[in-house]
Image 1: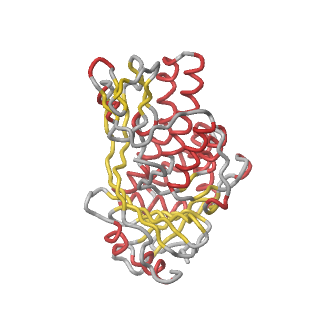
Image 2: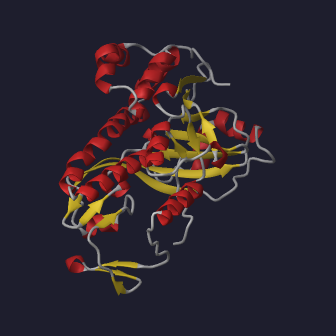
Image 3: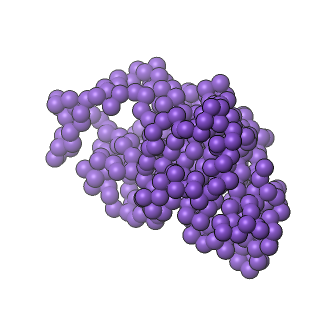
Length: 363
C-alpha cells in the first residue's frame, strides 16, 4: 500500500480526539474538513407514520476543550497529516514493502531481516501481529458491519447526525462545505448502505433534495468490520499492540481514533521510561468508558422499546443529553453523573413508557 490510505470510517473527530491529536503535534483546522458542534440522534419510528421522527441534540461542552467543536474530514487527509508528522520526527516509512512474520520473533521487511528493540502491532481488527505474538486471548463482545460513501451534498446540520432505524444506524458527518460522509452500521454483513437508506426514506430524500448536482455518491462504497473486543494482554516479550489491534469499541461510540491517540501517548511515555508493564496495566482504562457506552447504545440498537424510551428522554431534556455527552468525552466524571442523575435515568429507562408523539421533530 502507499499513502494516503483510505478506510471505511465515519470520519468525525470529537473534541477530545482533536485535543489528543494536538498532543501528538498535529493541529487540524476547519479548512481541512468541516466543523460540527455536537451530536444529534434522530429516531425513525419505522412503520409508524403518526410518530414520524424524534430528534435529540447535544452540543459539545465548550468550556472543557480548546475548541468546542469537532472536525469531520476525509480519512486520506488525516492519514496524510499523520504520515507528515511521523516524517518530521524522523520516522522512516517503508511503503509497499511486504512484511513477513517468522517463527522465533524473526521479521522480514521486503525480504530482508529487520532488527528491532520493540515491535508495535498497529494493524487493525484482524491483526496479524496479534496472532503471531500469541496475544489473541480475550473476548469479542459485539460484531457489526459498516459501510461508507461520500455524497456531493451541502450539509444541512452543524451536527453529526446518527439516524436510528430498525436494522442499524446511519451516521451523517459534514467533511467539507459541499460534501457529506454517510456511514451505516448494522448487524448483518449484507445490509449495505443502499438498504439502510431505503429503510430511512427521510434521510434518502434529504440527500437527494440537497444534492449539489445529483445524489450520486462521489466514490465507491467501502466496508469494514466493527467490534467490541477485550484482550487479556497487549504486551508479550518485545511485541506491543496499539489501536484496534489491541481491543476496540463499536463504531457507534465515535471514539475509535481517540482511543488510538490516547494509547499512542501512553505508549510513548512507557517506552521512554522502559515501563511496558505500566502500558499493559493502564491500557484497559482507555477502553473502559467507550466499551461501557457501546454496551448501552448496542442495547438501544437491539431493543426498539428501550431505544424509544432512551431517545425520547434525551429529546425532552437536552441538558441531560449534553451532560451524558460530556461523560462520554471525559469532561465530566461518570461517578459524579451517577451520583446526581444515575438513579433517575435508570428508572426512566426501565419503567417509563415511551411518549406516543415525538416532542421534537428534525427538520
